[in-house]
Length: 313
Length: 313
Image (tube, rainbow over all chains, first blue to last red; front, side):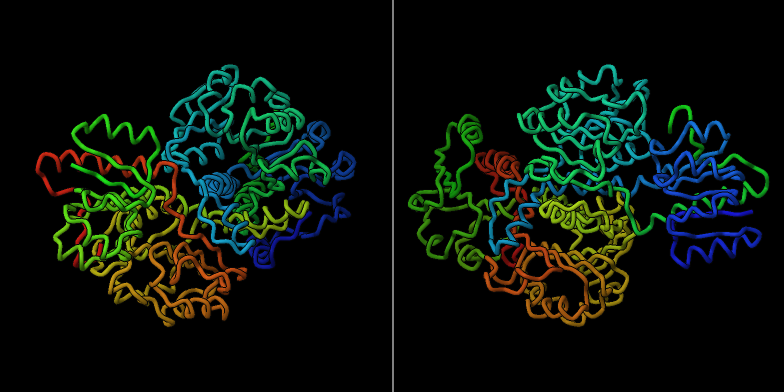
């Protein structure tokens, strides 16, 4: 049994796997795919795998994606080959929710202004600080990550409105609205946060009318996928004052082109798709992988966090 | 009955008081003390009142301080004159706790680095981000503000240790330690936060041995008063690696002298005594003041948040 990693966990984590699974040949590489033809299992961040790679991997039965989104992977080829695909859904919630809270609190408590004053050697107390307390937030996609954000927002005295297809209740949401009815909820929200994946339904889901419906000082945060809204619609909304501010972790094109207007906009914070980064990321990935590998070796080809290749998540 | 304000609330808040108390003459000024001799009640931020001012205010019976600390006020003169002093203890907890959380999360989630990358037009994903989750925090002074910080820290999965004179239980603290025993707790803490007022006991309470006992990567936050630790001790601890980082809202000398080493230190964030600032500050001050004024007019000279001039808080 061969397991190919296209990334390299720290030595301590490699040794743990090797010790726990003496019957398995692990190959830890840095994006090296030469061993794909003999690999039974592939562990990858997902972005480095092409349709040709899949076709060259004759023995491959299971791909464990150390990420949440699979939209950059050759889903059709994987489906044809009947490859089992699982991901690490759930491990992103802590770092991502902390990033969302960090950005919101930093803006409310004037941290960019404090940092700038310090750089300029200025004791400047006119911060114009406000509070997160008493705000209303609309969370588009109140799943594992969205609900964790909701839990933390509620601890700060924020009213949360969840938005999903069904309008069915979600954890840590004071209220729910369907995507079809979201225009009725947008005018209430001081903060609009999206954590939805990229699917056929979510692509370009937010349109000009949605930004027009938001408060003029609303903070829009996209921490899901960049194709939720066309860049030019969001740039317009920020430049014409339809909304007040945007914090963006994802973009239509990544890396964000260096001549993109976002870079210079005073009401945009660019987070270069790093909101799930954490020193604990690989450790948590392997905590998902190891029990699934044990099951796999016992002929149970049904890992947790199975990805539905039809739906794309 | 004359009430002198040495600061100017917004028109809407002035009108509310005037309407609610038609029998009272309100004078809203900008640090103007010419009406002190005829004032029965003074509403002030505290820093602008001298011993001479108190002696010139022959009719003055009550000073309402729109602040928490009174250490800059002429306490002896006020005591001799038997003036009732009350403050706005409690209204600082929301903005201050949000500021503490903002700074901690910003550091853990690499916000200064993201801001700098954006300024430099760089898509730089090597953030080295970590998480607040799983940390341990020591809170020196777990009163109204400290416990609110504890509540929010716990929501993020942080273990909280409260530190007070008695070691008696405080809200939202997983554990307690006395000030006398604090050296035993400091090595456990990833974060050390002080919110204690300035009193005889807290002046220079933290010494070199305390910083030596902290973790080398500990984050120290002083959001209480600047005389808790001598500047030179803290500068040394930060420069020789006894601790990792400091976020300072208060300083031995305020404004912080422009040639102070803190300004240029990469492991110091300067917050110019603004952590309690909030657009809601004056509104909340008047929410404390109005019921007390009603009681005062009904001959009840016992406002909430009475300051003990002996203890200084």
